[in-house]
Length: 197
Image 1 (cartoon, helix red, strand yellow):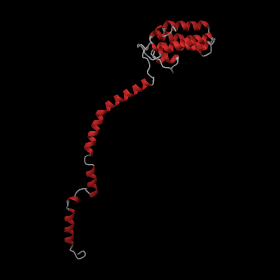
Image 2 (image 1 turned 45 degrees about the vertical axis):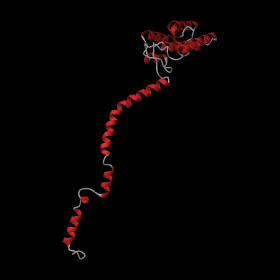
Image 3 (image 1 turned 180 degrees about the vertical axis):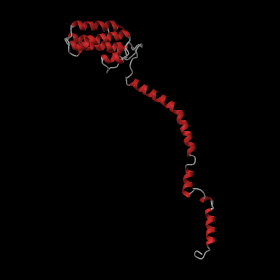
Image 4 (image 1 turned 60 degrees about the horizontal axis):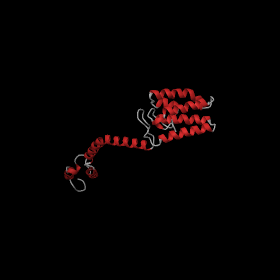
């Protein structure tokens, strides 16, 4: 007897209570409510992942298009070999201005500046005509290595690097003949790009 109630009676009442549905398995009152909150989550997650798998290639294409647009807008696009770069805004004017400034520097006696300006005009013009992929920051040696020059442009640039590199950086004397040769090269190679300013 427990507190005036027979043991069998307590055991039977306890057995009846524990036999109810809420006490079967691993259920609890809190667990049931939480389970109800997330009951459709698994199905929704499967649908979401399926949509993401289908959208991923589209998102990649959009990202690539955005990056390409931004690079072009910022002027990082280069003129590819074999294409006419004359449509590049201001290239003709820039080549003409460089040739004109080179002539003015030669007339003023600044031979090194004149040499650099004639070289710049030649390289910018070759980029504008599509004979080499041109980037402002590249040196003449980088243009040879990375600029994918056409055969004729490669020969010309190789010759110029050999002939003028020492002169451009002050190791050798610059002569009037060097500047005449460069001006002549500009006239021949940049005729359609503004080299006869």
